[in-house]
Length: 152
Image (cartoon, rainbow, N blue to C red; front, side, top):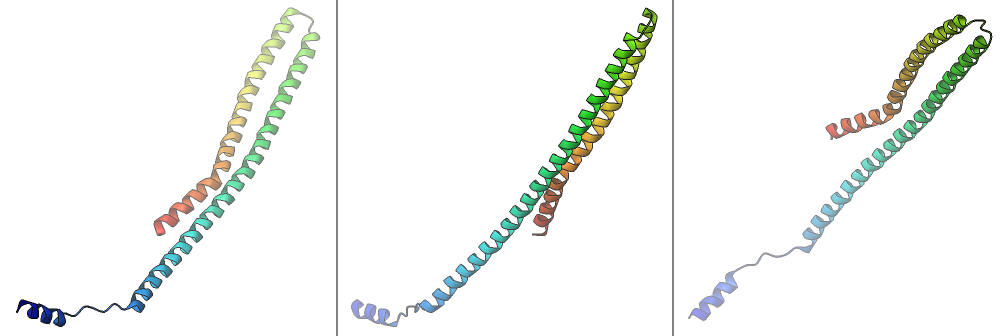
């Protein structure tokens, strides 16, 4: 009796049917969504890399220009210092007394200190501008990247 009852129960139990076409459609949709997300991520990565490359190229060009400006400023200062030194030497050679030599030397040293202070100010201004100019493209790229991250 238990065997017949078990057989009847087994016959009355329905198993859900497996529809392969629905599963295939779901897998396809999932795969397509994954591909689309990958394409979007790649596009963002590519855009970010291109922007970074442009920023680095701009920074390199700016650094090159600034370096040239600093070199020219240095050469100009060295030339001015050399000319002042030679002029002072000529004046010392033409001195007729020790008191004139001391007076010339004192005036020369005073002028050299003033000139050195002025040159240091010029170098500081050029170096500050250089640092700002060189960092500007990277700073701009970073700010743009942060804005995009906040939007996303």
